Image 1 (cartoon, rainbow, N blue to C red):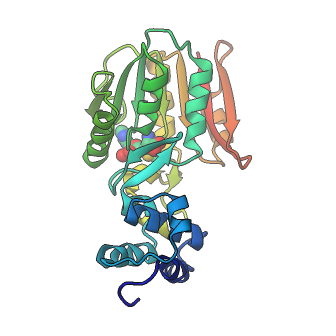
Image 2: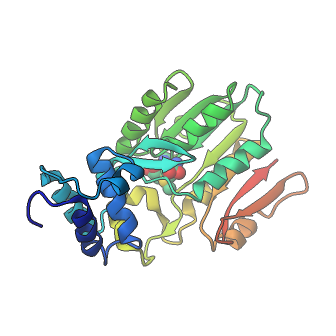
Amino acid sequence: MAGRQLISEWLDVITAELHEAAERPRREAELILMAYLQRDQLWLITHPDETIKDDHRLREWIQRRKAHEPLEYIMNSVSFYSQTFHIEPGALIPRPETELLIDEVLSCVDKEAEITLVEIGVGSGAISIILAQHLLHARIIASDISEDALKVAHKNIVEFGLEDRIELRQGDLLEMIDEKIDLLVSNPPYIALDADLERNLDYEPSLALFGGEVGDEVIRRLLDEVKARKIKCFACEMGYDQKAKVERYLQINENSSLKFYKDLAGFDRGFVLKG
Ligand SMILES: C[S@@+](CC[C@H](N)C(=O)[O-])C[C@H]1O[C@@H](n2cnc3c(N)ncnc32)[C@H](O)[C@@H]1O
């Protein structure tokens, strides 16, 4: 990669470099150049003959991506529910399938109600932020065990001007929450410790990924809390193979309803439990 290459040449070079690490190397090459040059796609396409003079950081980004680091961590930015959030290692990169968890919550709640909503495992803050934008009268308490994740959540909450709507707390599941909870939401870690994972997941915090030896340990602890605290509504993401385990663990009683939902690929992805 010699200095002062044309944008069109950089696109080809980056595409070739990312051939192994990226599923869509050309698209990622475009995204990298757009972020690096702070330009949109139209500008990029219409300026193939511009040269990039100072390419030091660009080379570093390419090397990081070649080593399978997720693009979102490299660019410190992630798109979720049509909005852009700050992201950095220490917090899980919010996934598109988690947008469905938000849709499930929004479809089962009275948007005008003054409820206390608790999110466990807030990570980057994306779920709580979107919910705060839609549920204008909800009081939101969001908790995480990880200080690094809470720092990212705090940065995003400030960025979105929601400091007075979302209260962050650090603790193990609900240990720091004594309030009566109307709605509990969580995308907990649910992968089994010995699962075979893609290389890019090496960069994400283990605390955010692994639920325990079997995988559903955190979900089961949350279900115990829901029962003990008589929480009326619990919306939770889970692994594609955990539906039967959740059903078995719950052995639902007559007054409760349990609804599972699928992701866009047709896999079981979560449930809403109402008491
Ligand atoms: C799968 S990530 C979800 C992050 C974010 N809510 C999202 O959907 O992108 C799970 C989060 O749960 C947190 N976590 C793991 N174990 C926890 C525990 N025992 N108590 C509280 N939070 C925990 C992790 O630090 C991580 O931020």
